Length: 329
Ligand code: TYM
Image 1 (cartoon, rainbow, N blue to C red):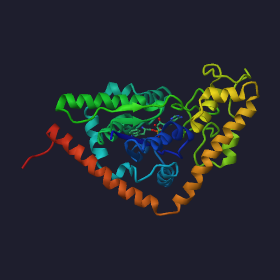
Image 2: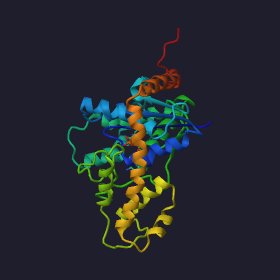
Image 3: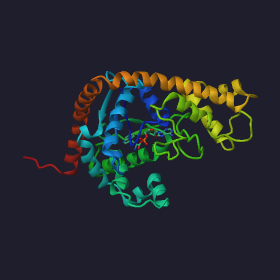
Image 4: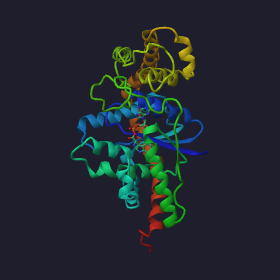
């Protein structure tokens, strides 16, 4: 069975973008792959987080993984810091990464371009830690949304570089990106990605949003004045995004949805998208409410940490031996 690994960084509450671009795919793949899914808590602290908020967001993320349908009997679910090998291989990866490579990472470039002050060294080297996350498990595939493709490509380069220098050690992973739903856009500004750090809070739907609020966000989503329901991503990005959301959540082809609503007003289509989103959120939230008050999270994490550590420690030890870091006696 081929192996797959992915993770989410809960710097805030998980979003509909996380669900469509990543989480629902983990659930779909768990029957056919040996699946590892973790909560990337070390990645969260590249920027300051309120400790209380962070801890709640991490717990919620695990509860949401389960609520969205990840099954601990099929997938290994764990918290990154429960497996110490991540930080250690992360450092080793940083020693095999060139500054030029990190400076070319879109996230870093965007923040630099915006003139962000006090960027941390952790933010800069974070792709090295992400490479370690993946390589520790010798994952064949990494299911992610479009924005993470560049990081998985760097991981491939680092794995190949390490293998060339020290001999065959790591599996070179491939990103797995869906055709539909790989980049869900903000509802208030369809030129931007839907993201947890949405300042207006109108463009992003969170998985734990009150359903009435989620509906309101969709009904007031920015569209255009063309007034025709069709698939024109360039000129009708907001409309395209709404259709893509509905298509991802129902598995209906986008054109099918266009055909159903062609000739009608945007309000009708938005109402349909809101119904679909609220259906999905409602089901997830019902399960979340049961899980968050149970002992399931504790059990899943303790089991996951054991399984993940056994594999990760083994890979780390092999890498350290190859580099010559171990003393033999
Ligand atoms: P993060 O937490 O930003 O996002 C988690 C996953 O959700 C996807 N995603 C989206 N997909 C579609 N539309 C959107 N608007 C949207 N927003 C987010 C992301 O592409 C991602 O798949 N560095 C990673 C976390 C990470 C990781 C890893 C992932 C750390 N180590 C190892 C895979 C393997 C991140 O910040 O993702």
